[in-house]
Image (cartoon, rainbow, N blue to C red):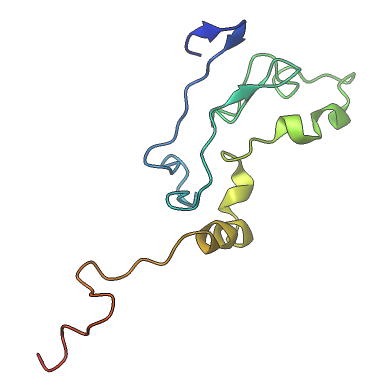
Length: 118
């Protein structure tokens, strides 16, 4: 955790150049218009999206026969941009489809400058 503002802890954003390099199959959000969001703390006091997957308040770290697994369902357990689900082929394709096509670095928009050069 970093500093606290307005009684809410500010958590470190793990993104570098709009990607999550610590996840080998994570898509790059660069050029998609999707902003990588920092981790957050849900209503159970569990840090979501820090890629450490272990939080002192997590039911997984404090499991007992009285723990109801249903409590770990819902949106507050899923990080919008740092979730393992982004690594699936379908979700990677969705991110990639948001990117604007990139031309070749020396390409003229209307004239084929390489015509007759080979």
